[in-house]
Structure formats: structure tokens, C-alpha cells
Amino acid sequence: MAQPGKLSSPGRSDTHRRILVLHRWGLWVFIDLQFFLQYDKLRTQKQRLPMNSIRHILHVHIAEFEIALARLSSPDLRGRPVAVAPIHAARSLIISASREARMEGVFKGMSIHRAKAVCPGLTLIEPDPETAEKAFRAVGHVASFYTPLREPAGLGHIYLDMTGTERLWGRARDAAFRIGREIGIKTGLFANVGVACNKTVSNIASRIRSNEAVMDVEYGTEADFLAPLRASTLPGIGFARSRLLENELDIKCIGQIAALDPLSLTCLFGRDARVIHQRARGIDPTPVTPPVMSPMVREEISFEQDTNDIRILSRCLHKLVETCSRHMRDRAIRPGSASVRIRYSDRVEASRRCRLPRHGFSSLDLYPPIEIIFQKAFTRRVRIRYMELVFRGLRPENGQLCLFNDQESNGNKTAAINAIDRIRHRYGEEAIRFGRSIPGNEAL
Image 1: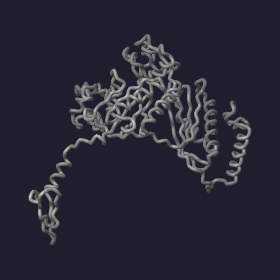
Image 2 (image 1 turned 90 degrees about the horizontal axis):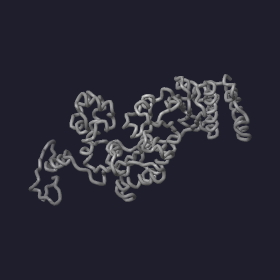
Image 3 (image 1 turned 135 degrees about the vertical axis):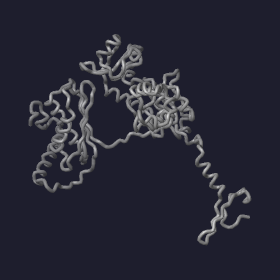
């Protein structure tokens, strides 16, 4: 029979327990040493995760997304070296190249003149961001049917967390086959899908060319799968760092990186050494994070002809500000910040952002700070093809009056803006216009 206060476990005799009895400050304390020894052993021993706690991460990869779209509309481009680059820009660079072009020596970032000299049969296609984004949204719509945890990672790249969906779609490998097949049916694009327990391994698995559209890396074999692959395959290393590893340490594959300790890699990769070492061992705890959609008011314009005429650009910018401000007045909201994004003819983008004053949200109040950030973004003597204006940090209008402004002038301005809105609602947008939005009156 167990003594009062003694720790005992059911089903075991007290004679087999090692009990430490302490008497201090008038209290008797009974400590079961065997219990603590077993607990410490279980805590320090590396336990294998149960099958129901293993993550199932899919990476959907559509290689050379824009080139794949162009080959859908022009089947004669299949099997030929193709690259995406602004054709009309004199010093434009290659944005992406097909597998056939890379085999000829064409790579991303090469000038088009050098690319044509290396590969005379190279076909250049103009980038079309609008069509590419529309097609990528269609791919994301197909993926969203299978799981709400999806993370877009650029054109042609989507991470999907299929953990816990076995009762709906079966094994992750079967779901990957089904997703790839449905993407091909609805969009006509061929997708490679990598299946693994984390994002890094699934990304690499989807980029390995094989006879099957799905590459499944079983749990526990991540390090063995990565070991023979080239070091440049590992995310975070790339071509430049792989050359550095090969020249300095004679390291050519991922398995050699995993065999090193993180301290040895610190001299080459700095604070990224620990993350790269974990990825080389097939460890990546980062979760699949869906994009956060914040409310915003957005307007854009694509010019029929690329231009760098400041008068035309100012007129179009004022029209964007005017349209956005009217939408916000109709919804009784005011913005907290604004951003301007422009895309040059050579596909280079620039953007600037600023916080907006709390008083007033008409186009007369919003245009001055937005004009300043536009001038900060427009720093090149290259024609502009696309312009976007976005207002964020929206909040309801509380009706608080400004203490230091002339209330009478503010009231007159508000009444004038409301009258303009009523006229436009009744007779259309072109019934009344500001002088800045009329060609030839940009200086007003």
C-alpha cells in the first residue's frame, strides 16, 4: 500500500520505484526519481511526428509563365527558343527565357543584342502584364477550390497547404494530380506540382524535370532527396553564391552544404547562414500565408502610346485623383495614404508612397502630395506605358472640423465639390471638368 503523499503510478508495484524522501521546514516531501528520469528521457529523445501532424505542402509551378501563355495563342512557338523582352526599347534586357533559349546560352538579364548574337533564331515577345495577371488569377481560382491556405509567390508559383484535407481529396499526391489536371483543362497550361512536408522541398521538387507531372517527396527523406542536387537549386543561393561555394570551398551539391556546420557558412552568407543550412537539411518551418487583402480605392491607366510628356502625364494623374476622390466621397470614407506606381516602356517599375493630410479628401486636397510622389518616382528619361494610383488606410468620415483652417472657405469648397458631384451623377462625367484635366490647360 502506498504511503500518504508518495508518488505512485497505477499498475506498478511501489517496491520498484525509487523514492527520494526529504524533510525540510517541517514538511515531508516524497519525490519519484524514476518518474523524472523517464520524463527527461522522453523530452530529450527525438520523437518522430505522428502521421496526422505532418504537413502536406504543394507547390504549383508553371515554368516560364508568360512564354507558356504566348505558346497557347501561337503554337508555332513551341519547341523554339523564345524570350520575353521589351522589343521597342534600345537597351532592354531579357526578362525570361524558355528552356530551348537557355540551352543556346540565353539567360535572364542578358541584353537583347547579345541574346540575338548568341542565338540567331531567338524569337522575342513583348511582355503583357495584364494578360499574365488575368491568367494567373484563373490558376489561383482553380487552386482555391481545394484549400483556403494558398500563397501566391510570383507568376506561375503558388503554395498550397493541404494538411487535414485527406477526407476531402485523399492523399496529397492524388490531390496534386487532380489540381494539375484541372489547371490544364481550364487554362491550357501545364503545371508541375511538388509535394513535400515544407515549402522549400516542395518548391525544389516542382522544378525537377521528370516524366511525371507530380514529384512526391516522402516525409523523412528530404535530406536524401536534396543531397545530390546542385547547390544553385537551393532557394537563397542562386548562381552567384553557388560559384562562390564552388571556388572557395569546392562545394557543388546541397549535401555538402548540409554536412557543414552553420558557423562555417557564416563567413560566406552572414546572417542567412543558419536558414540556408536548415534548408539544405530539408527543414523549413515557414507556414503557407494567404495574402492579406486590405480595402483600397484603385485606378489605373495604360497609354495607347508610350509617352514622357509631363503635360500629358500630369493631366492623366489629375484625372485618376479626381476619379478616386469621387468614389471615396460617395462612400463617405477618407484615405490615410496613397501610392503611385509607374511602368516604363522597358518594363522597369517605380513606385512611391506618402501619408495624406487628415483634412479634406477632394481632388483639390489630394492632388498636391500625390504630384510630389509622382515626381519622385518619375526619375528616368524613358517613356511611361502604365500608371496606377492606390489609396489605402480607408476610414469613415467622422465630420470633425479642422480647428486652424478657415471654416467659411472650407464650407464653400465642400459645397462646390458636392454640386459638381450632383451634376456628374445626373449628366455624366464629361458634363463638368477641372481645367487641369483638359488638354492644353495643364498649367492651371
